[in-house]
Length: 395
Ligand code: TGC
Ligand code: FAD
Image (cartoon, rainbow, N blue to C red; front, top):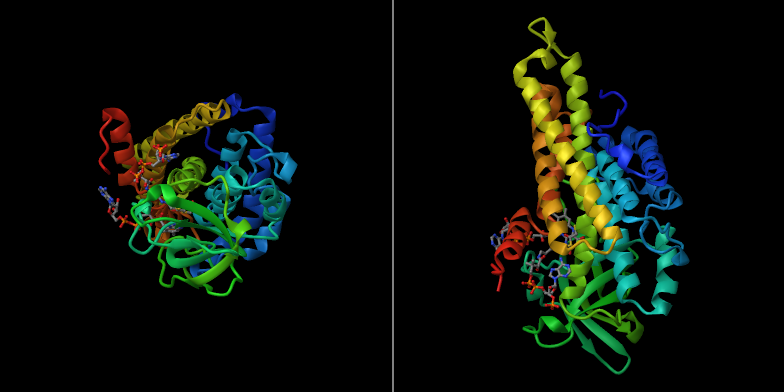
């Protein structure tokens, strides 16, 4: 079994953090060690999200932590928020996903596109975990290309009628409220996309969990079906306007994922170092062999680069200067290196590396989802390609 997490900080990144940022990180780090680590392996094997942790996460202020205090949120800066995501994903990508969907994909659109009444009605209940939300953008035939969506919202004299299906929706079966993106005009009009807050107990709304997942097992992922779901006029997020609105939410979530992936990589590296020092083969620790040392050196190098990337991105975001393309670069790089670190750790651990008792295989399997969701690695490559050349691969 892995020893207690020691932290990974080769370049004294800690020294670049404020006292408050370190305090937030240390609080979440202790919570992950004490409450999440002892149970996550079992939940993963059983394919269950640890729902019993929701009130504790709310108590710690982990939901929408970078949103303003006037709605009960923690009002933290983006670096402190990122450090929360890092520590949660050090535990498990599914638990980080739960918090990032709630904060970046559900509370953020209500905050950014909602009316004052909607913000006052929903945000405090979401901070406290009383209401869990999900974010329905992806459809069975429209994943990387959400602009093609065929879910529609038709205006009536009393409100809106929604029809369509959403696929791969995190927290879909747990949620009391779904942010649903739908076209309010012709199917070829991406500018008619609007966001709706849909209570999941509405007639015509159903959520069915996806079975047989070999990745992100400690997370609920569902298909949502909307059949003539009638919502009142005030379900519409009034300031949502076109495809740009859901894509703005993705930028918030991708930012958190960039940090989260570093957490998963740190967990694996820590496990690899500890195992390499303790596992004896040919009469000495395997960490004494050059091959394993090269593995560890590569891991530490990539983690250190990813930590510095996140910190500078967070500082830019706090200054209002971070661009979606900079977020894409960090999501793309950090998830990629974290997947490599997890794979190399699994291999370094030999047969033990396939057990749920250790972390590497669980992180590796999780990171395959993280590589795909919130824009696949390929999509982020093309976003960067467009930024570099000015030529879009999509349109
Ligand atoms: P395109 O013409 O490029 O853009 C339309 C408008 O949106 C603006 N925009 C963005 N704004 C903010 N943030 C971003 N990331 C933005 N990307 C684009 C853009 O400037 C434009 O604005 P305007 O003013 O000109 O109208 O749109 P496109 O249809 O060509 O699509 C581009 C593409 C492929 C990059 C986009 O569709 C994309 O990102 N696809 C990936 C889909 C995706 O990431 N889905 C994620 C679903 S949610 C999820 O996976 C949750 S996982 C759980 C968890 O987070 O833990
Ligand atoms: P596709 O778009 O079909 O892609 C298939 C392959 O084609 C990929 O390799 C892709 O990179 C490649 N490809 C696509 N377009 C191009 C191109 N132009 N050029 C080159 N290659 C291309 N969505 C939500 O809305 N809400 C959620 O909460 C949510 N949670 C998720 C949780 C999990 C566990 C997973 C796995 C997914 C989740 N998603 C969610 C969906 C996720 O965002 C999509 O899976 C993702 O955007 C990719 O879409 P797709 O799976 O349809 O793949």
